[in-house]
Amino acid sequence: MTCKEFSSMIPAFMEDTLDNDSLRIFLSHLDSCKGCREELEIQYLVDKVFNQMDVGEEVNLSKDLPEYIEKEKKLLRARKRLSITAAVFESAAIAAAVVTVILYLI
Image 1 (cartoon, rainbow, N blue to C red):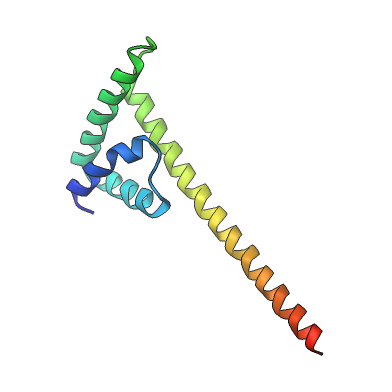
Image 2: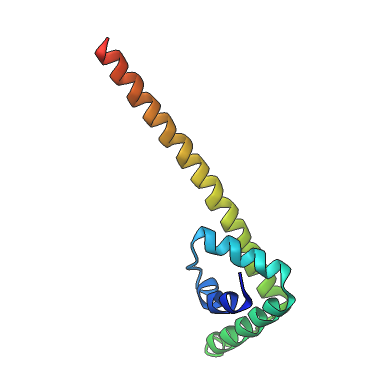
């Protein structure tokens, strides 16, 4: 992923609308690129300041952004486990259907 691609994905990341593959690539690039981490911090701070000004809450960038990133990493892991579980159930359903057909034909 290029830094330009990363930058264009920041709004979707903050809106939690990235698909699993995009989120995985985004987070991987974030871990390896200091410049993009700084760009995310800036955009996150600006977004939070404008959205929080009406509410009157304080924005703690050193706490809020790492918590949000960790939440997204956990979400990605949970989605991966769910995909694996769904694949196992799908395989079991197909196997059951095949066995049913074989038993019906006998």
